[in-house]
Length: 423
Ligand code: PLZ
Image 1: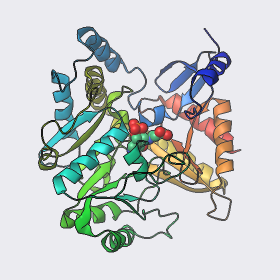
Image 2 (image 1 turned 60 degrees about the horizontal axis):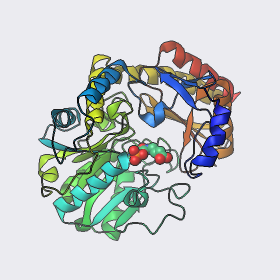
Image 3 (image 1 turned 180 degrees about the horizontal axis):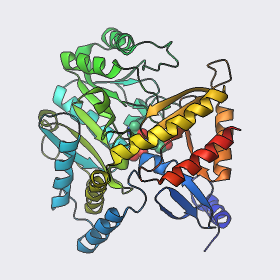
Image 4 (image 1 turned 60 degrees about the vertical axis):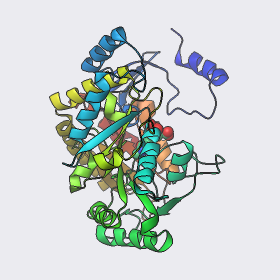
């Protein structure tokens, strides 16, 4: 087998430079909480492929379901010749997402595509043009979702012009907004919408209940409920982007549930299918069904292999109670991160929920972001055998997203490496 170094040489000659990788090691196999490269080096996995392999890599039920489906048929296109698993995935999503009302779902391939479709549905159903998003938001890399995403580098730089009718308002970011309470932070955002856009022009308010790429920003309690309440009164479709927070990651099936918020539409991807590409929009039947027949779709949306994987992944989440596992992981991680924060003044804050935790790194005694220190700590983790990711508008957040099936030993081992990386 070629070595990672040899593969990297080939990659540089074959793969476009614009596609980056966190580590220069090439994967041979991955499972549970570990990734092994072609040279036999191992990393404890605190990335889960960016919050995708919540059920673990090659989870047994997923492997079995995919294998069985591949042998029956690989693709007919649901828009041409439909099949049961697509319907079954939609039934389950309608049942597990927050909100007791009648729902419908539609399936797509990627998170960005789900977000695009949520906006299409909200615009079609309301007849209004504007979409409101937040500072630090991340919603994808397609043209519309680049417009919805906040951060220029690397996501938007020189890729414009961008789609119109997108308006950005402040996020509740307790560390950086002087600790505004949720209701006050929401009032500030709402006033900006009403003054600068006009509620009657707004089709959708789109928000990550805990921001992912933007820095694992957890809004102050009350922020999401206040926005939800305003959206209801204003006839605005409240869209929760649960692409990173979803499928047990935060200790509940969906992050909105922690504050009892019921979105009109939810965008889903990542954790939904144990690593196979699948995404969805789930929401109120009257909004979803407002769109004319043929108005939603795509060649591969709800591919049968991905649907089989999703059914198996959701079964695994129920069987192993991965929401409870995420809460346990969060308790263990939170304690260790708290101890690091207590001794290292570069840690401004430990935040997140369940198995979606992060630390924000600053110049001690200030709130000045320190992306260089963040990158150095992350690099030390990689060198010592722990795969960590960074995020944040300022590149100064170290985030931890282990698979929810990680063993106690792997989790403890990973936290030991992290602890040592802080020095
Ligand atoms: N919405 C909340 O987190 C994807 C992006 C990685 P796709 N986040 C990882 C990168 O650098 O491209 C994401 C997300 C939220 C939407 C998306 C987009 O999902 O499946 O990557 O299109």
